[in-house]
Image (tube, rainbow, N blue to C red; front, side, top):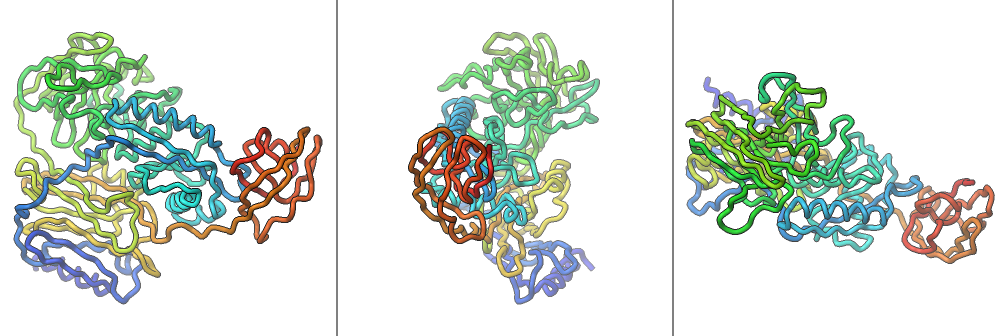
Length: 615
């Protein structure tokens, strides 16, 4: 029995077990798979009762269709390049939780962080993007910490924080990104930015560097890592990839004993955002000997015609990786020559810093540069680099490229879902793919496209970095020739027994060309069928405010009950200069001194909290 018949039999059995109906879309221009709910219950979309993922091959489900892309297909994009240009609006949302004494950051301090972040982003973008950052006052979350920790924490926090901002008068939909500054109530890293390309969560009180790092994740970038080799070649295959190991990049910089500083993102990241225009990157693919002047990364790229100084040089290493050559002139421990990193042809891998003097010292990142007169040679890739001259603003390098043939891998993009990538109900996923060696229309030279819906977790990241298939996808759908694009998968995510629970997911897309070349990308997003939680009622009181050693003041505040009492009891006591037990409800602010009041503040939006005893 053929493999195709076997697959069809297993598919029918899976459909029967799941209570699903599979509806094909037989059009001449493409093959979409729609997975819809049947009458039976479904614990997880795409799994049978045994939990085995459902795999669908569209080429067999749909039957024969014409395989040529439509003549009017628009030129597809490349997910690796996601421009961040023009006016960009960011909203800082400060939140706190019932039972917490105070937010981790005051509005004034958050504005100072915002100023540092704005300056860092605009300095990195060379004026190709401008950033406006608005800051909310501290906003109460409607639920206690336990509510958020009992669900998909990041999803629940995001939904309620945005709803709190809306109720405070902020039109959250007009912002390109939001940064939620919250006490760290999630079990993961302090910063979370690989969610949906729109939202970052930060759980520290003063960390502008971390905000810049997490915003880098929202731009689609992974970490800046380090290829650690104890001896021999800088590109020895037995090296170790050190996470965060590039100490000169905002997307890295976590080496022990190395204080963070506000560096520039590396050129691969900036090029992907459009901050370094294509004409400022000298891409060398043809054999020959070239002399190139590289402009310091800290200097704005040259503009206009007749570029003579390039911000970076890009050399293909293999079908999957490029060398990026550049100069960090203002790094005290990285400005002695040329910096070399690996950048990928996919958005999954991190950038990787290479050490040109491996094993020279314990902290090998201190001398990674290729100095004047030194050579680097990659015999397998057929490239050689030599630094000829160094000035405070430029490096002059010689690049030799030997004759070679490199297959270009499929280029992949995701069209849907778009916007803030927070989806619910039946979700339509649509990808594009083409082989640039064949053509630049959707489907050109493509044999198969496989779409995986997968929880965004560490096993997925590890598998993708290792070139393996996603380890536990919720749904897998393969669209194969002779079907043509669009490459579409529709998945129901709602219902009483949700097929796909709320959470952070990645659409993983693998495209295989007719020549066998394979490429994989991912597309993080949020599935949220619950949305914001219900908010408790609020109450407005007009109360006298008495500080230790001060006169009484009048104040108006909005009361969010933090215990089961429907309304707070009336204010009935004042503070004295000694230990005092305050009434049950008190005015809370940054400093707990003055049990009933806030030092130096008599008005403004603050938080009401149950009173306690202070001295």
